[in-house]
Every structure is written in structure tokens, then in C-alpha cells.
Image 1: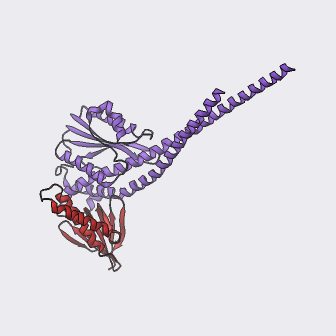
Image 2 (image 1 turned 180 degrees about the horizontal axis):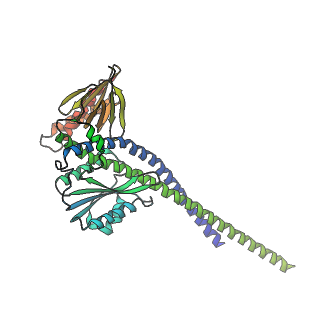
Amino acid sequence: MANLKIIKKRIASVKSTQQITKAMKMVAAAKLRRAQDAAVAARPYAQKLQKVVAHLAQREGSEEHPFLCSRGKERALVLLLTADRGLCGGFNANPSKEAERFIRKNEEGYANIDLMIIGRKGRDFLKNRVGDKITKVYEDITGVVNFKTAQLIAEEIVSMYEEDTYDAVYLIYNAFQSAVVQHVTVEQLLPVQADEVDKKAADSVDYIYEPNRGEVLEQILPKMVEVQLFRSLLESYASEQGARMSAMDSASRNASEMIGKLTLQYNRARQAAITKELMEIISGAESVK
Amino acid sequence: MAEKLKLEMVTPYKQVLSEEVDELTLPGLIGELGILPGHTPLLTTLRVGEMSYKKGGQQYHVAVNWGYVEIDEDAITVLVDTAEKSDEIDLARAKAALGRAEEALKTMSQEDKSYAVMEAALQRAMIRIQVAGKAR
């Protein structure tokens, strides 16, 4: 009988866990939809800006602006985007591992690599591995992605770049592909990469620049960094919700499976107990005869 | 006028406008810009100000924040941080923001770090009120 009770207790516990994972899945699905919409809505702006920068960069001659020319390889900054919360499969571990790999790989190339992390989980993961490289951690900003946040972080990065604190800035994040597929992506944030230029488009038009080209470039390039960061924040957030949704989905499924197995076990044990009881009664009756 | 301008206006959050318009006035960095079909390709930054466009005899107004505009063969792309159409503006909020900015500016000196920030906020609020006043 003791066995029966234990199994029953376990079934109840798995059931309540399943309730939680189911609820989390539902919440993630709802958030995913919103995050996905936001990511899609931000796309035209980023694309248009990229196009214009590509135009500009090609004409500019890459030596003219510090944001466009690559400098020496002295100090680099790696910006890692993760989430503040766990329970989302490999969402936090994958880019964190990538960041670690990136640092190890480039340790010889760069004299110094610093790590800036957005999200608590990334810090937790890397604290004991490359803790000495972490210079700054932002927490609690991934939940509400707005342009202002991206702007502030971008401003900080840009000013560090301008002051020659860093020669290059890289960005590592989960690019959103679909609800179940996320790719860890390494992007170069600074100097601005202009090689994704649509060459034909750039050649076709000769613009008038007002007030002048340098001035326009001066204003647009920092904006480019902001937008790129904003977009990756949105994508990372959408990826997080997608990853959590699929992780919770498989957790719920595993729980169902477990409940099935336990129920079977429970029924078997119950049957065995009944049989045993019957046997006892029959043999007791026999002996009275 | 047979020809039309294809106006697209985007903010980081969404596409605000995608319309065919007859003419367009923009707050360029060094002055107001009027644009008619057949304009030369032009790229310029915008300041905080009021953008207006005419479509089918109707005049529309939009308050815009920092941004820039690309004019290319009658296709106009306006990229701005924020854009609010005249009928979307919350006048009470704008007035409150104006009051706050004025208050803050009174106590600050010109050298203050946030002076420029507050001044920009003041300007934004003023533009917003101005544009809201033109709502139909």
C-alpha cells in the first residue's frame, strides 16, 4: 500500500509541474507574437537605413570617417545579448558559449578583449569562465525593448569607440528565424560594415547632400549603430520567447509521458494489491471450512 | 499635376505612412524644404519640426523628431525617430511636457549638461502643440 501512495504523490507532483510548463508555454506564445510583430515592424527602418549608409559609405571613401575604416587590432569589445530568465532551452547557453569561443579564438589577435553583457543569464554563465573580461552587465532591460534603451547603450558604445577605448565592437546574439529556429549570430557593430552594399543601386543615383556629405554621414552613422542594436535586441527578445515556447512545449510533453507511465505503474500496483487481498480472503475462507 | 510623389515614412517601431502625395514640406537641417515631383536626388537630415504634405487638395501635418530624408526619383523615404500625425497627438500631454521643460529650463544654467536635452524637449513639445492645433 505504501508503494501506491508514493506513486500517487509523484503523479500529482508531475501534474502540477506540467500545469506550470503549460502556462509558461502559453505566456511565451503570446509574448512571441508581440515580439515577432515588433521585430517585423522594425525591419523596414533598418533596411532603409542600411541602404543609405551603403550608398554613403561607397562614395565616402572609407578613410574619411572613423566609423568606416578599420583600425588596428588592439582592443575589442564583445557585446553579448542574453535573457534575464532561464527555462528557455539553449537560448542563453548557446550565445554565451559562442562568446567564450570568440574570446578564446581571438585572444592572440587582439591584445585585449572586453565583454559587455546584456542579461543576467549570460553573466551567470560566463562569470566563472571569463569573469575577468566582463566589464559591464545590464540587467532587466530585455523585457521591455524600446528604442530609447538601445539608444542609450549605443551612445555609450559609440563614445567608447570614439575615445579609442576600443578598436572594434562585436555583437553576439540569437537571430530570430522562426519560433523554433534561432541562430547564434556574430555581427560586427563597429566599424560599420559597408560591404553588404548593393553596388548597382549605389551607382545609379547622384545625391545632393544637405548641408554636406560629411555632416550627413556624421549624423547617420551613429544612428546606424543604434538601429542595429535595437534590431538585435528585438530579435533576441523574440528568439527568447520562441526558445522558451518550444522548451516548455517539450517539457509539457515529457510530463504527459511521465504521467502516463506512472499511471500505468499505479494501476498495476493497485491490481496486484487487490489480487493479493483476494487471495488472502480466499485462503482464509478455505482454512475455515 | 499628373505626377505624384511616393512618400514613405518609417520609424523604428513601424511604418507610419506609405502614400502618394502631391507635394511635401520638410523641416530640413538648414531650413524648410518644399518638394514637388521631379526633384533632384537629395539626402538631408531633419531637425525637430513639422512636416506637411498635400494629398488630393487636403493638407496633412505630422510632427517629426530627428531624422533624415532621401529623395530619389519621386520616391521619398523619411526616416525619423518619432512621428505623430496631427490627429494622434495628445494635446494635454504635450502641454504638460511643455510646462515641465519650461520649469526645468528656468532653474538651469546654460552650461548644464541636461540643458540641451531639456531645450530639445521644449522644442518637441512646442512643435507637437503647433501641429495638433492644425488637426482637422
